Amino acid sequence: MAKLFSKLVKPWYPSTAIGFEKGWAAIVQLERGRGGAATLRRAATVVLPDSLIRPSFDELNITDARELGAAINELATSAGLLREKRWSVALPEAASRSLILTLESKPASNSELEEVLTWKMERGFSSPLDELSVSRQRLPPDAHGKERYMVVATRASVVNEFENLLASMGWRVGLILPRHIGEGQWLTMSGATNDSLLLSSAKDGFLAVVFRNKEPLMIRAVSCDADECDDELYRLLLYYRDRRSGETAKGGNLLSRVLVTGDTFDKDRALEIVNETLGTDLRPLGAADVGLQLTTQQLSFDTIAAPAGLATLSWQ
Image (cartoon, rainbow, N blue to C red; front, side, top):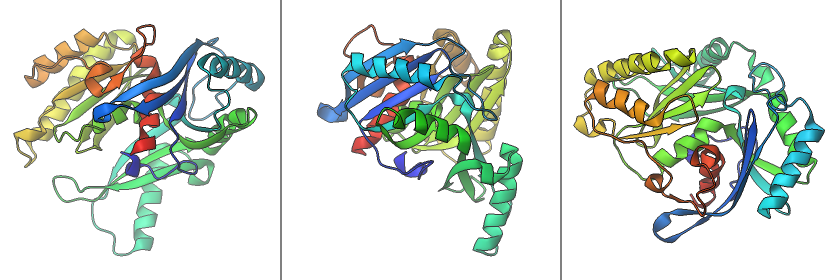
């Protein structure tokens, strides 16, 4: 999936990455093991005050850069990674927005293409593009031959505050992407052609991403109360099932893997809904199932999945 996102900042892919969310941060360094499996060389997590990072697309996320910098310094020291200089960053999910744009007709020229994409992005992100840091990549056409583009946007001021935070420690940021991109990396590395589903906890709901042939097929950000998440997942799966039934793709694209991260869903309950709706017999994936060897059971895969996923780009 590395080719899918050219950059939000200059793209080079170190084996060290840090992830941020409300209430915690995680830091990892990976190495490639035998058979292509990923092994945690070093990792650590830290619990942060809930008020220290306030994930938002429209506003700054860090309320006290000095306090957060001190916490990250201590985190890196405990992991033995303070001297590392090159980093990838997984942003809080709510700090970015991702869209798949489908063109109803083929543009007659490159300038018309840019006009159409600009119009769709400004509507989709509800912000002027000159305020955003945007990455985009052309995707394969949909089942009807229509052109599609994946776009990811983060407000430039938010990118800057995280870059500046890490620069104050002497670190250089090579890649900044939303959390679900790192998590989704675990579903795209195996080369499987069947559809895979990521269910990632998000602010006031969840984010669902269906991957096909290593690329996003569908992205849905669902806002709902905690007691409504099961029903919303059921509705989303019905939409996916109905959409797939109208495609020309053969049965090989049937959903075959589900990765659930965060605390929005009970993992077993989420898979129960998937299996009942789609007629599958799947179980939730863990770290070992997606090719990550945890060196200690004290680390939560849910917490490190995003930065560790970005770190795998170092050898792809």
